[in-house]
Amino acid sequence: MPRGNFITLEGGEGAGKTTQLSLLCDAFAKVGVEALATREPGGAKGAEQIRALLVSGAVARWDPLTEALLHFAARRDHLVQTVWPALARGAWVVSDRFADSTLAYQGYGQGVDHADLERLYQVAVGDFAPDLTLVLDLPVESGLARAKDRAESSSRYERMDKAMHERLRQGFLAIAQKQPRRCVVIDASAPADVVHAAIRRAVSERLGVALDG
Ligand code: T5A
Image (tube, rainbow, N blue to C red):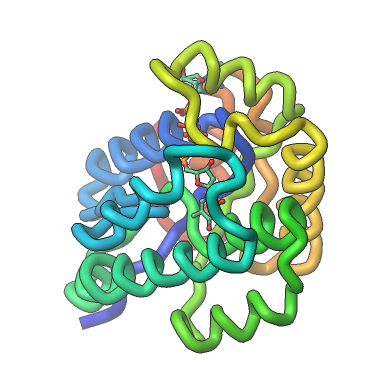
């Protein structure tokens, strides 16, 4: 059986990943593609427990390397329990965040050495990588305002300082520039239906599946 495709949605706070993930999975369902929606940190029982440790509490509760280790522990559990079994049975998997978030947040944002993060990736993930990564880009202020409007209580990450959010935005753009075969940058400042149309085009062009408008 052919392996399914693995698509990741990346970007800063409030970029619209969750909204777009839902629209994309609906579009897949309409054309008969089984697509599993999942997220990081989380997406498996143990990984969700680790997520609770990461998104709540004081901003400075973890040093950045500890935080990166927790994200990779959650990621390994997510891959083993959820992502790899789904891909192996031929389903497609769409994940709200994956390893680019660790490089952007803990690397570009919080200063963990990029080579250390690459080594952790090799240990926890190996040669596996997304088939397509959609980087949702918009100004930091707009994303934080959207996240604030939506959230009942702000997550630990939303409370980090604005300079950190600017660094990670530039980090995502740098990642996309370095890996143009895997990554497509999407202007996420447009209305949700316009962003969705851009995502459908990118999926069609890169992965060869035509999605209805
Ligand atoms: N993290 C994660 C790391 O530091 N390292 C890692 O390795 C990983 C994997 C949790 C946190 O973990 C950190 C980063 C994160 O801070 P998360 O749950 O994905 O990750 O957190 P957020 O990115 O904060 O998720 P949000 O739900 O806030 O943002 P989304 O999913 O990007 O945005 P969404 O779709 O929920 O939309 C936010 C609001 O905007 C509206 C929506 O209706 C909603 O109200 N909206 C729009 N409004 C106008 N125009 C549009 N186009 C809109 N699209 C959505």
